[in-house]
Length: 103
Image (cartoon, rainbow, N blue to C red; front, side):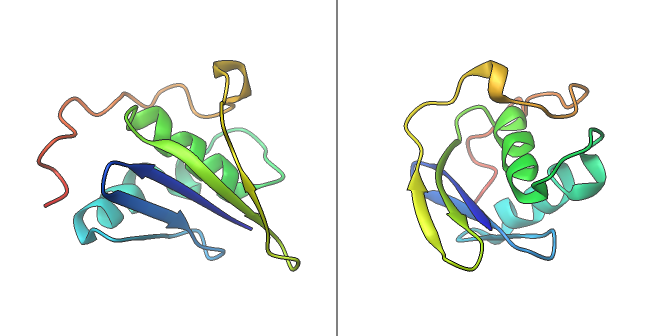
């Protein structure tokens, strides 16, 4: 499975090894710190989905845009996510200044 997030020109995608890939090296580094599997406290059946939800919790401008599932590589485009769908570590604080961080 792979989950993509996006905000303006910035995109990032989860990898099966628990890391992030991004079009911005700075964003990739930030996500690998703030939305790594180590930060997820609840049990989960889908670590990549939980990583993406943790990322958008900390970076509120970002949205989950695509979920690609397992071996079939079927794409599901997400339109809306409700707050009740988010099951992540509630201790993560939103990043205060997102602009200018992803140079």
